[in-house]
Amino acid sequence: MGRHKMASGICRLCGQKTLLSFEHVPPRSTFNKNTKYSSIEFEDYLKTENPLKTPPKGKIKQGGIGYNSFCKKCNSFLGTEYVPAYKLWVDCGFHILQNKEFKLHTYTIKNVEPQKILKQIVSMFLAINGEWFLESYPELSNFVASKDSNELHERYKIFYYLTRAENVRYMHHVVQGDFLTGNTIKCSEIAFPPYGYVLTMDSNIQNPYLNNISEFKNLDKRRSLEIRMFQLPTYMPLPLDYRTKEQVEKGI
Ligand SMILES: [Zn+2]
Image (cartoon, rainbow, N blue to C red; front, side, top):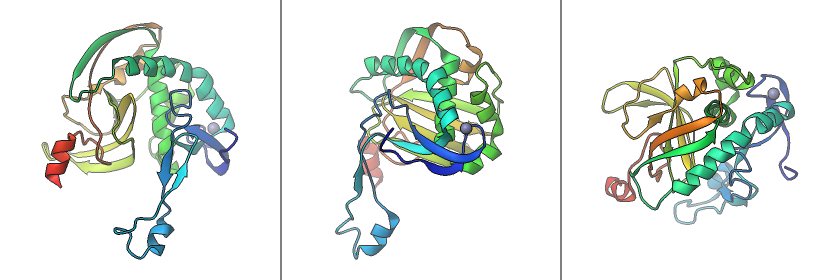
């Protein structure tokens, strides 16, 4: 954590205005310790005469992807309560990940703690979204902050899929039209190998490849779990876009 600075702001879990520590998303212990990623400042784009011809080189950052989103206390609460359960879940995902897209995987995980996993996933959505998110959707932080709570309002649904995350995806809250149904979808999405997650608010999505895991909220005991999930590609920085590379190239 040493090389990550603190920043002041509102903790996305307890709501206090204080110094926020760097939260790895996903947790540092789930293969996000040394993730390298490049970040290009918007000003560097403006300074470059022709950004398309000679794109500015981003500063390569190391030490994992994350956000200054939780106070120290909440950060360590998550680390103690949910991260160990989440790590086991991630290890299992890596075991079954294959070099194949749109494959349906079915398997059993033993000794898994679904409710804790779900709380960790929700905390990741709190971490990547802005401060306003906490105020607009208070039930989410309540669900995470109280470790025995199984109360997560039905307006929220959480889906998952297996993915190699060809491009990692950190989509903040977006509102999107669903071409198939004409409905509006409010969602946020995170994809980092081996899993992708979609959180929807007050929305109905119909996608046969996404598995709804909102019911994990009621599974508060250690148990065996039958899993069914599709492996999906994430080439484009768009929520709910699982086109193959060929489809994307054709689209362009
Ligand atoms: Zn806090």
